[in-house]
Length: 271
Image 1 (cartoon, rainbow, N blue to C red):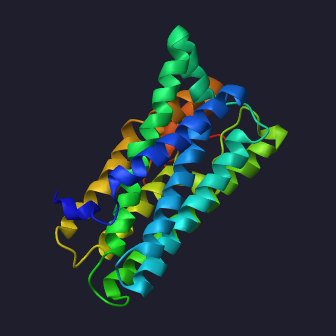
Image 2: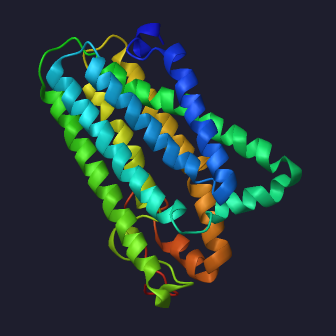
Image 3: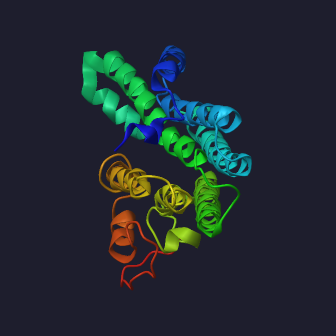
């Protein structure tokens, strides 16, 4: 991949600032003992980088407005959701608690490294938007419009999925039960599906750039990570531990990632 992919994002200038931000967040996490601050920090740093690229980038003004607006909306929605549901006035996510229990005396060092891993992740994913903003074409074309449509589908779908789960969990009568209504009827992880779809929105926006085909690396990496590394495996293990047979039946009837009509089951449990 040529260096001009990241030409709009000068890594050496951003690295110390973003790294310092995550050091501050790590210190703050020591006080509240909630590693989800790293996830909120990703959204914050990502949004700031996109704003700077949108303001100071050399690309067409209308394109910079559209793409930076997409990035800001994505970061603001996801960051506020994570802060409300995983940080503010709530206990640490059980996935991080499980990791802490396995680390023992290495806990602080490993969690610090986890916070710092967010630095290259922020630069890498924000770099995609900065690159797309650098497009030599003027105005918004058909391919760009397709990207915006995909983005809107993704951001709205993820917001709906997150809200449906949030409302379900707020009802004490649903404790130990599995949400099988709304978008969660068609996918066990619709929030992850739409998160993945969001990154595919920038592929048509890259059409016309040198090495435009390389833009598929970002959504592929995110999809692989969500499906097999950071997303689905941890969420499924947590759900099985807390909901047992209810979730096993859900696994038998419902698509793991891509939304599809549920299969019938003789042991189906209503939500």
